[in-house]
Image (tube, rainbow, N blue to C red; front, side):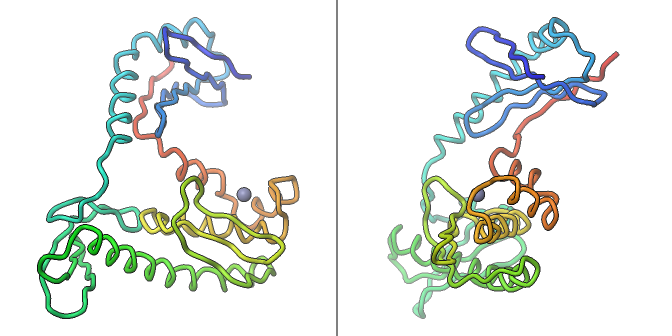
Length: 239
Ligand SMILES: [Zn+2]
């Protein structure tokens, strides 16, 4: 059963579950608010609780707006860059050799010619990220071809605006978003398995869900994490 609490311009989706505590979460990217509450929670009680957290909710939503406004990367010294879910600091050094990238536990080092501009640096980084992603995909696809009994005729890695991956059922090919290289590897694996499963069942119908339940039981969690890692979340113990 789902209710909505409206507090001014803020809508809070209330989800009653077999849980002990109340969880209030604000989800990126758009600041959607959800409240999970024990089955017996009355709506007035949930509402009274939400009101006490209103300032907190607004603050989280503000933070998310800030993040959406995040400036594009400039590829300069000490800038943050993500790889496989971890944050690294960028280090830029000059070389007269071919441009390339190296990494240690804390830093990603971009080796470029003196005077290289932003576009050049971005291109070097992008090629490096793509090659890492290719290596990982080539490890994962054969493993799941065996498990699922399916053949991927070809896969492509490219910039995609709105999706993590897609699948062409007819040609037996899948496409993966280059941005995946910034996500934890288990989530990248989930996207690959998700698209490979579409080679068997093109839509998300019951056969598809049954297959995912059997072979990748934590698909729901993975999907949630990818789409909306709740940045912030508070818990309230029920009396
Ligand atoms: Zn799908």
